[in-house]
Structures are given as structure tokens and as C-alpha cells.
Length: 112
Image 1 (cartoon, rainbow, N blue to C red):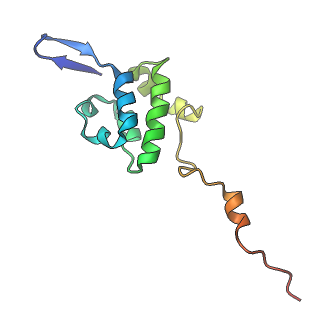
Image 2 (image 1 turned 45 degrees about the vertical axis):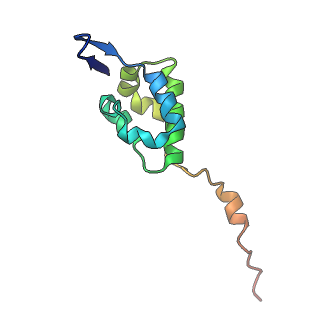
Image 3 (image 1 turned 135 degrees about the vertical axis):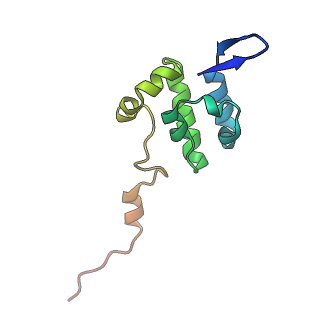
């Protein structure tokens, strides 16, 4: 969670909120960012999904949580935050309204 600054000979806390906001604009860069190796394990796995639309939504949710929590606390309470729907889950990742989808299929009339 801290980045070692060799020229300062000490550690300094990373500005996670500004890093995440940058990643929201370019979600593909998460994999290649120098800050990627400092992400806690659960959060790293959560963010490194292949679908960039889902990744952006997860980054936005993480940014909103960083306003009131620090990264360490989010990692510790990760499953509780998912259970409370403060982080988006993968139940319906493409946000398809299945009732509208089903209404497009032709209805079979009663066969005599």
C-alpha cells in the first residue's frame, strides 16, 4: 500500500483515489500500471477482469469507497462490501433486462 521512495529513504502512502480516477479514464492501463503491484490481492483480482466496461464500473465503485475508507480497510472488508452491494457483482454484468428480452420472442398460439 506504500511505495518505497529510494531518493527519500522512506515509504510514503500512495494517493489511491487519484490513481483510481486516472484508471477510470483508461481502464486498460490497470494491468500495466506501476501501481498494480501495490494493490491488495482481493482488489487486484477484482479489478483485473477482461471486460473493460465491467472494469470501469468496478473502478468507479472502488473510487467511491476510497472517499470514506482506506485501501487496507476495503481489502479487509471486501466480501462484506460486495454482500452489501457497495461493489458491483457479476450477477448481471451486461445489465440485460431479461423480461424485455423474453418479450421479443414470438408467442406460440394454442394449437388445436
